[in-house]
Image (cartoon, one colour):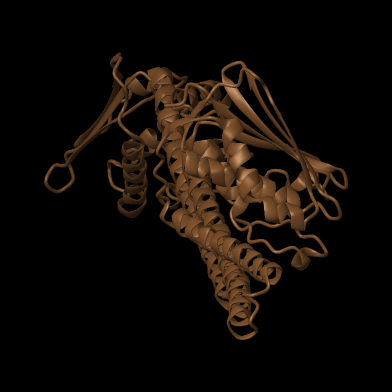
Amino acid sequence: MINRLYLSRLLMSATLLLIAGFLCYWLTQQYKTEYNTLQRKTDLLLREAVQQVQAERMKGLHLSFNDSAAPGKRRIAFAISTGKEAGLDSLLKQRTSAGGNFRMHFHERDDLPPPPVINMAIAHMIDSLSENSKSHGGRDSQDVKKLLEALKKVDDSIPLRKLEPRYLHLLQQDHIGLGFILKRTTLHNRRAAMDSVPQITGAGLVTRFAMSGFNAPWAYYAVFDNPFPYIAKQLLQPFLFSLLLLGITTVSFIFLYRNMLVQRRLADMKNEFISNITHELKTPVATVNVAIEALRNFNVLEDTERTREYLDISAVELQRLNLLIDKVLRLSMFENRAVALQPAPVDMATLVHDVLTGMKLQLEKANASVQVKCSDDLPAVYADKMHLTSVVYNLLDNAIKYSPGHPVINISLFKQQDSVYLEVADNGIGIAPVYTQKIFEKFFRIPYNDRHQTRGYGLGLSYVAHIISLHKGSVTVTSEEGKGSTFTVKLPLDHE
């Protein structure tokens, strides 16, 4: 049994460690997922902020270039979002040479500009025009140069002082309350920068570049110092669920293991009980056999005094045997939890007198003195007489058993309010305060040094507590080590 308990404890501990490890791994993965989600949100919101600020600063400049000299008479037209910056009015008045023309004009519009990918297309087209001008050197090269020179004069950058409040507003709308720092830089490779993240040492979270402008590739990015509070808030429910799961599993294992310990303790006590009661059952049977053998073989029937002595011995041993059998029946009753009460009016004074009469030889053998005090107006109680008799017997038996020397037992019966009280006080060894509640548990015995000198099985007081609780009453004990104990039984008068 010990090996099984050790193995069970080992398996439970290993299971808890595995569950805790899995939960840690799961929470780590959830943290990474939330981190990536936060980065995507901040990336998109930064790009949206750049677009909104850019839309406010630029009012729909429309540029077109007709290349009639080129094969297929291609026409290139594009729209950029820019403001009425210096140098654009003079650009409107320029005309191209024969075969091709370039025109540029404004029209006011309130709708948002195209997404940044259009700016990339524009920048790519400008690069193509520049290369075409260098390679061909034809009659439209001067027009292309004029176009490029005009575009260079356009200021399409976004001041950080205008971008920062817009980005903060978008973050607050998405319930992202994190501090950040906006930064701006220029990049040579516009396409590669669209999906890259700046490498900054010590930063908690850095957004990808948000590109702006076709004249110069401006790149904006935000640096967040500590994204952990936001992510921890998002992971609060999964963390609480994990904690609850681990807590319930731990409590269940502890409860299961404690039950196993209790079962082992009960099994040990039951084995001890069987061993003790087997020895106790053999003793009275052997004594009675000896007495009967003496009556048969030694002609003691003619000796009246000797015959009476042997008969008294046999009667005492048979009574002892009957009590032992009664204890075994109680054990079976407790295991089956089937106690059927047969209540009827019971006179407690008469019941106590009958119990004392049945225990006369036991009291005389222990040299015990008993005093009974009973109120004159004591009413009858509605209870099961047989079980109540066993309750009184167990209390008196314990008083004799645990009162060495000359036991002095005081029994009091009185009525108080709507209940009848039975008090059994002795001058025995007493009970330590730590054991005053445990003595009513099944199989429990106080660990005295001379425990085995006093026979007992830990069933008497547990039986008393159970029977009294079935009568809707209560049993308590007040005791002091070395000065005796007082057991008080309360039985309600209105019990049905």
